[in-house]
Amino acid sequence: MLEYNLEFVNQKKYEPLKTDNIPNKRTVIFTCMDTRLVELLPKALNIKNGDVKMVKNAGAILRNPFDSIMKGILVAIYELKAERVMVIGHHDCGMSHADPAALRQSLLENGITEETLNTLNHSGIDLESEFKGFNSVEDSVKESASVIRSHPLLPSYVNVHGLVIDPATGKLDLVTKG
View 1 (cartoon, helix red, strand yellow):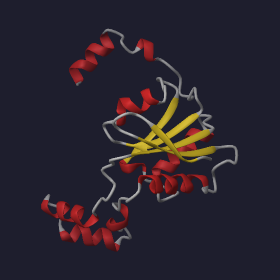
View 2 (cartoon, helix red, strand yellow):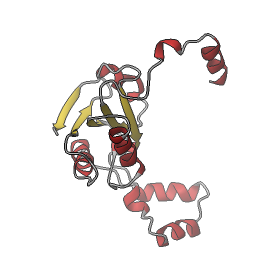
View 3 (cartoon, helix red, strand yellow):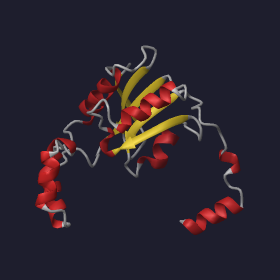
View 4 (tube, one colour):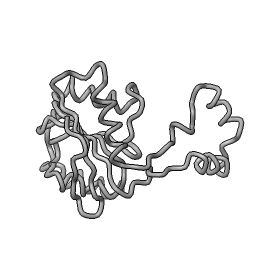
């Protein structure tokens, strides 16, 4: 990858991608980090470099209104002129039916000690809720959109929409309109 990067820079392949930091489409997209969406999602929405701010995590799950995802969304709105938020989950997501107990076992098998897990638990970090997945991607998208929509610092002019994309075809379905 670094060899390619050197060639990319030396041959000035970045030139056609130049833009500023204000999203042309005044939109923030909060979506899943799934590898199938890296190229598919922008192409399915006709998004080009510079069009949107993109924030990602596992499952496009937002449960805590004061975590780093929400901070990114608020910065995009207040500092970078975004006026719309799109929460986009997807079918066949790795976080659907995620099993925190299986994750805990995997942590232990990979050298994380029971003592470390107990320390986290006693520090107020609940691995069960942190790594809980979802059964319905539509319901999960609605929940994440609701957390954003209900945020006390979200300006009233910002619309928050929830969508689900098919990672095989790129077809988008609207599940909640803001």
